[in-house]
Image (cartoon, rainbow, N blue to C red; front, side):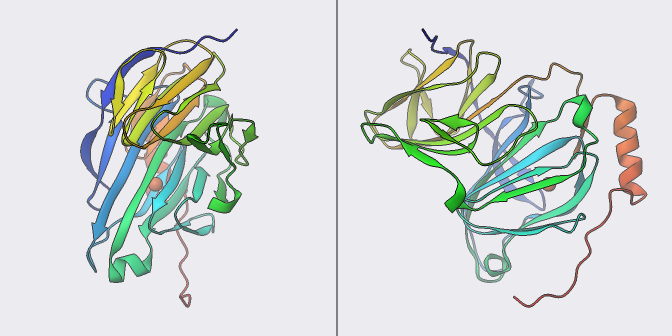
Length: 294
Ligand code: FE
């Protein structure tokens, strides 16, 4: 016997400038809301249509103490970091980067989009790490769209891409340090699907196209709204009058002190100061660039 999770609260994303000046929709953090443990930040980038020469990203910057997840819906992003990783992300690809003890990276629209313009749409989610793993070795998992498992409900009205965790009997290929679910659902009108999420996890549902109903109630969650769910062990998602797309995020709350500033998320203020000192003195490394043929 499962218990469907009700809505605890609904948050409407605000718009914010990020990186070198691109605009994101950000439900978390927001006014009076620092994080929804263990999720530190949810940014929807775009969709934005860049003219030639207009595309901007986030050039070289550090991170320590958590994970950044980049999920691309449209466009192309290029990534490189101080550990020597270099990646190219296209629509449907995911990069799950564990900053751990420290990394410097750059996240930019592809050279082609920078030069010729184009559409960019995607997500960046920050997942906190427990105190015991904040200084772990950086890790980089990049999974192309074709390797992300998908599943469809029996009536064909709900489909899911399982980036992390499992749904409708399929399991993700991404390995997470703590139990995390990261699903992208598409719901047609009339879709009604229930997926199990362990009762010790916090569950969030962010709608980024159309409208959906979350839980057994009648409240409609609209494009740009984040539903925070109450206790239970099952999540019910229903379509509304148009096709909907949403992210379902779930994770076990860490329940540890959070000291955060900019690109660093630690447990104490002293650890934050050390992070700034380590970055400024070059101990998080730098990106080594060599000319490459495109
Ligand atoms: Fe970053």
